[in-house]
Image (cartoon, rainbow, N blue to C red; front, side, top):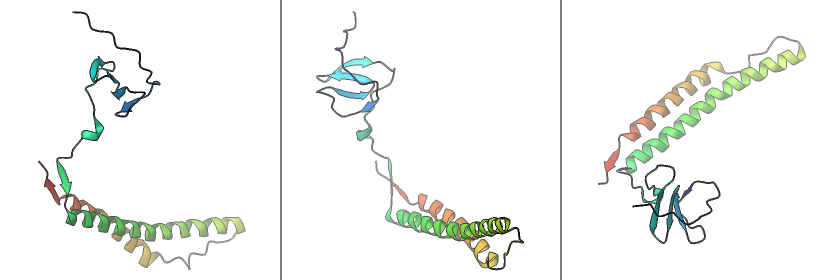
Length: 137
């Protein structure tokens, strides 16, 4: 049996997921007119992104751990980055003035290891938050 030829539907060359284009629903590159499938022109299955339901969800404790870990990581990264940017700025200002760089006002000792430690701790706390999941199905 010969396959019925689909009506011409202007997709604009784009990839659509759901939606309505002048009365024609276009999902992926599959063409549907009046709820009849006219085949997949890209060789893909029917993809409905809006119907994807996750099998697992985060518990409140996990979300708190991830937020706390992210906040700790950002604080540590900012402290570490402050030292690095201060070092680079001192070097460039010394090069501009043709003098020796003055590193006495850069606080390497408390901020560099503390910032690195906080960033690593934030990553570990965020990773622990992933383990607080529950199955939804």
